[in-house]
Every structure is written in structure tokens, then in C-alpha cells.
Length: 108
Ligand SMILES: [Zn+2]
Image (cartoon, rainbow, N blue to C red; front, side, top):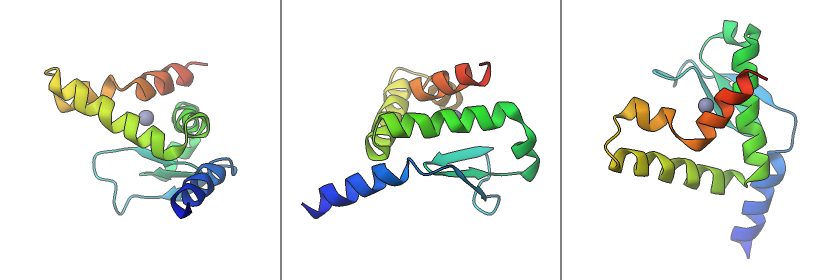
């Protein structure tokens, strides 16, 4: 029961307006990371990039459609499946369905 309440609360907070947080202290090889409603960015300049904002906001949208936990599970499984199919790290990441959709959203 408590698990479902936590699951639903986590999903509900994903609907808060996005909150931008400087994550340079833990982000080495990534520019942005979204755990709705939080959008972590590596460099402040990225916030001036319409492309960056559109990309990360697409991930917020995805985590509203799917509950964040389900999003993370699908995201991780998609990566593992891509790796199992012989892709290197970069291609496996690049071909995650949520990443493809976020890249498409950058052009909208
Ligand atoms: Zn992304």
C-alpha cells in the first residue's frame, strides 16, 4: 500500500513546473538529466539553448505520461537491450526510444 502511495506521489510531483538545478558537481559526461520535475544542467549557458530546454522538457513530458519509475525502467531496459544487440554505449544511449523522441522534440 505505502509503495503505491509513494509511486503516485512521485508521479504527481512530475506535474510540478520544471525546476532547474545546476548539477555540474555530479555530471561528468552528460549535459542534462531530467528526473521530473527536476532538470539538472551541467553548464548555466545551456539554459539559453532552446534545443536543450526542448529536449529536457520532452523528458519531463515523458515522465508525466509514464510514471517516472516506469519511465526509468523502460529507459534502462531499452539501453540494456540495445547493448545486448551489440551497440556500443553511445549508440545504445542514442537509440533509446525516449532519446529519439526528445531529439525530435528539439526540432519542433
Ligand atoms: Zn535525453
